[in-house]
Image 1 (cartoon, rainbow, N blue to C red):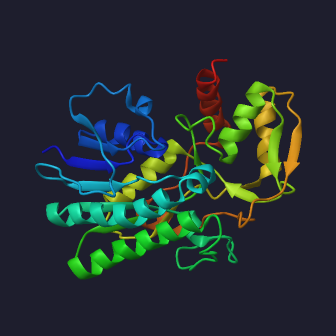
Image 2: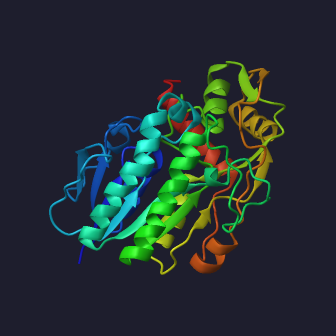
Amino acid sequence: MTKRTLITGAAGFIGSHLVDYLLARDHEVIGMDNFITGNPRNLAHIKNPHFTLVEHNVTEEIHIDGPIDYILHFASPASPIDYLELPIQTLKVGSLGTHKTLGVAKAKNAAFLLASTSEVYGDPLVHPQTEDYWGNVNPIGPRGVYDEAKRFAEAMSVAYRRYHGLNVKIARIFNTYGPRMRVRDGRAIPAFVSQALTGEPITVFGNGQQTRSFCFVDDLVEGLCRLLFSEHPGPVNIGNPTEMTMLELVKVIVDMTGSKSEITFKPLPEDDPKIRQPDITLANTLLDWSPKVSLEDGLTQTIAYFRQALGL
């Protein structure tokens, strides 16, 4: 029988790719978004009669008729630009939004997947980051609204699992990239690619030696759904463990785009993590998952998308 799935944040970057993935596997999908950072254009290509898009703010009561088998809670501002401009909304969707969606999962006896984040580790003192690391987060810093919203969401989800016996899974998502990211997203790859393609100076924060690990969205979605359909509650890190500095990333993007852009340096933002790399031993062992798409192949698709989005 067809499974019925609710995805919050369905018009966002990752949410829209999850919609595609599950529709291709014969799920009936209800997408929910208030478009505060998501874009309905990310779903405009879908002509499947088993897809419904509902405009709704998940911090308010959610009413869905009929059964629900799975709920994927992906609603949240997710880039530094977003949660610095939308601090209250970010806190509310991580707290009230998680509470409301967990309430639906409880009422429908649905499996629940929480989109948590590597940001729960803060500016880590352990490297690479394993799921048993508690993190190094500044709760009153500018990034605290996102970090603590996700940490609270994890605590709320685990409370529902322990108290109500709910089937809850937690995925800690590391840096992800690919088509449908916003040009002015504020994260490294959208910023570097759009600047390289338009010939603008490429902005590097700090000395460019801070590291990140970048996972292509197709790999991420596969890992998320393996967790969703598994017996493992998590948290599980889902990301690419190949670590690189920001300057190394800029060089790859400049080479691939043939850009003549110069590099400019700006001060490192407050509480910006200096290192970030997932230990994916659990995902590999429990889910038989590891990323397959190389950075070059992923960037080829991403750069092509950005060329089109920029009208180049």
